[in-house]
View 1 (cartoon, rainbow, N blue to C red):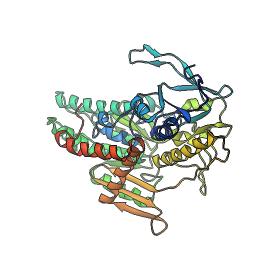
View 2 (cartoon, one colour):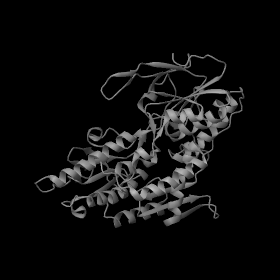
View 3 (spheres, rainbow, N blue to C red):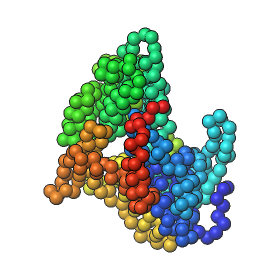
View 4 (cartoon, rainbow, N blue to C red):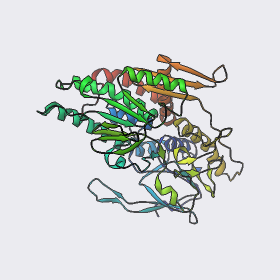
Length: 443
């Protein structure tokens, strides 16, 4: 037992340091932890945090993760909470304990042994993983973009493929440098645009034997009848038009049936050759949630929660973000898995935790507010729809205004973690240093 109760403080354990979990730990640390009103512990399986909507930029090489990752230990020190490294793999609701698996280094040596943590309130915010739907070969031959490590792995594979093509004495084969993206949600379409830009920039750094227009093809495969099926049709059509201008091949209404080391096969019999395949189709919560001491889950492993974000079978356990199935009031189905939902839920849980530590039972209910969607196609275009415009419905936006709105989402996340003054200084530093740096990662 690592965090034995040595005081009368209410122990809040947050599992998952994604956007929502880290924001919640930071705000609770600044309010309850700093004033010794509660003991806050954040548990995550990695040492650093990168905002998940940026992973496609890391994969394409247009962003250097070293300049955008946040050290959990430093954040905990600055904001009065504890950070513990490890992956949750068990729960004992009767004892109010979570179990953390042993942590091993890259050589397989055990660094941290198995531990348990006591809690009075447990908050689970472990996000989601890509759902491969059991498609043959998807797990073995494609790369998801759920983590920073996966994004960096794809970029290394892409860079190595380009270097290999530059130095080989034989002609470039069909599919050797082609990229296939399975799934045309925001991640898929944004990655396609970023790759169109970065492959051309990479080729300019001495890769003169590669003709990017001839040798590199980028394709998107989507089972639905249009791109971005969860977003408004007008936005979808605008994105498809921009991608076609970039010569991105778009295959809609095509369901992938098999993935191999040579390419992708669809239900219609179409074969698209590629040695670089990204799987971005669908999400599910991590599998271990299905067996978490009897807590209720749905078909994609999400923990079912009430409007208070409490799990249905245990009032001391909360869940939010992509790993939670929360009813969407006034709509059929659940709150969509978006960053804005996790941010809203984290803000609500700050209020909830303040009531919990004083034993108040009138916890606030969560109501999702949809502020619209934005899709950034790199330097080429940004489009989106804003909800709740003066018209009372949605307003389509594009161009500079849309780009500024998109950039503001990340700035809002940073302000939740650091505050306005530090974000302003970071922005100024980035503007100054970018003039002396390459615009694409070269390794």
